[in-house]
Image 1 (cartoon, one colour):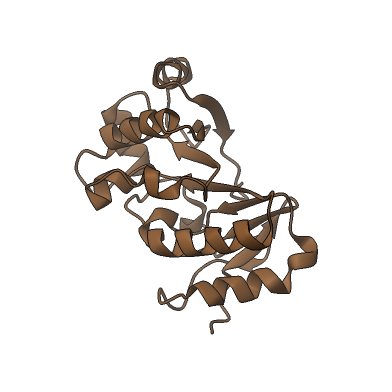
Image 2: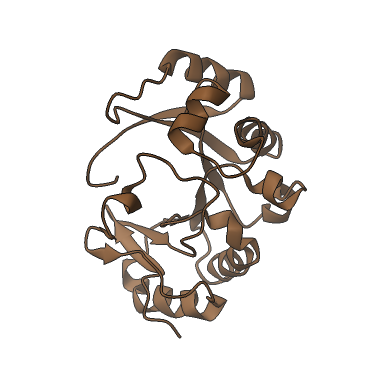
Length: 207
């Protein structure tokens, strides 16, 4: 069992923090600025997390569970794909009607060298995917990926998530220092991919 904050609450919604590892090093990432989100320190002392570690923390706040649970923390959730599937299965079985979302950088299919989306059908309802730029150059400046082909993989992941029937939203962070993003072009790209679009104005509190 770990005392790390694997489950935390933000604006009345429950979030699950599975890893601090990420294939991006985004210039605007809140974890480079502070250790916590509304007092919850999301840095983990271990990456060796079991489904029961997460479930125990969920059960401890079951009276506060909302109708939506989001996999999102100080890392890329899909790096813990098997853990996501196990936890999501538990939630669906024990809290039917709960909507489950993953906030992701969209690199999963590139990381695993396969389409992971069919594995998540019936477990995950929504994806929020960080597009973060109108082209590879802007994306690389903002997201600083450590794997090649990251930007194209994000667009492919968005398109595939839509194709597989998931409620899919592409997001773009705007307003961080003097970094410029062509919002209109991002909206056009998102429309071409068939997804919804959401602008995320950067806030120094991280959300």
